[in-house]
Length: 189
Image (tube, rainbow, N blue to C red; front, side, top):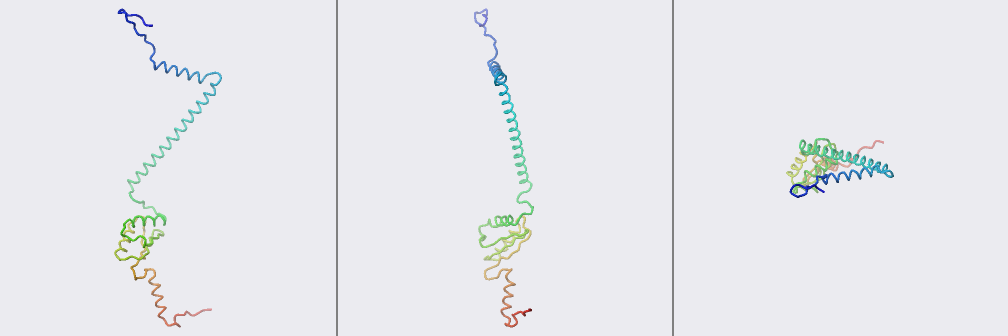
């Protein structure tokens, strides 16, 4: 065991620390596992394949996290530098939905009585409203929506014809007031 000192107590031996013994034992077990005569080659190939797989998965995971971080930063940068909607041209369906969602947030506006169509950036509003002030307010709000190039206002008040129908109604009345012979067109055969 240990040697006796002059006072009669034993001196503790200075052996290897327990961590070093454990590490040496694990190292020895690994060497036996990898270099045993019967299965060592298979164990080495298995270890090599698992290490390569771990490396590939780690690279893929790192690339994926890198892309996610890049895209997140691009999105945040876009929100900071370009608040609101972009000025890029949008298709008619998207523009119609944008107008409806931004203009008709106000619950006082009669959304169900207005038809909104878009074509080439021009918004066409049709419907019958109760006051001229409402019509003006809606047209002004639509003009402020990003992507709207122009507004064709075909809304009208109760008892008045729609702006696009006024000429047809006037022509119909004039035709009805004409004498019967004059109203018929000559036939060219």
